[in-house]
Length: 258
Image (spheres, rainbow, N blue to C red):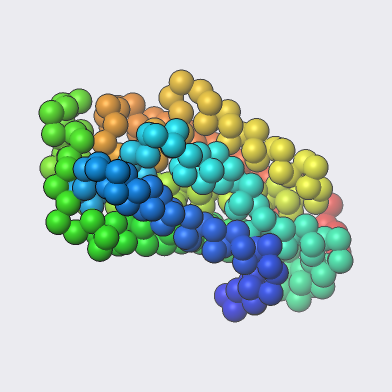
């Protein structure tokens, strides 16, 4: 199945289209918060430190990031897994499997889920990064100038644009892996009452523990590579193994549906 086939299905569905636009443009709204603070007499941030992932909207309790990341798997399931549930309900899935085979059908959906989710999240974050560089050009305020958390932190503060891009890529990669797992849950279980809670529970387990997944999404924190890398690797490996396990079950262990 070609890219335009999935793109057409996404764009013809108003709910999916709304989620897609939300993921692209929600980070932009935080810029309004910074502008409001400047209007009240606040500092004009150096552009890289006004980036969405820096979580500097403290007065709002990180509201913008909370809305975006707390429920990210929910948004991604609607975006990339709903068509799997719809195909099963309408039996369109059977027609596609007859045409291209079960393995290819599943792998196409996994690729679609990963690429659509990761590219959408990365594009939304980089669009925010571009806009803060335009809006706050000439800003000089650096909230981390008198702080030193170690060599990795020093590298980030010394190369803030590179740090923003690295953490954006990490967020996009994890979003893609979670979405792939969501797609496989939808293909195997076919039931929203199972798929949505299952993926959200795994997300909140990683989200609420001491070494939260949010650490991987926030540059300029006190955590170094030694703390961040195990969190990122654990989350990525979990979603990869979940996807792989469900794929093996569906393709090799479960009875063929045709």
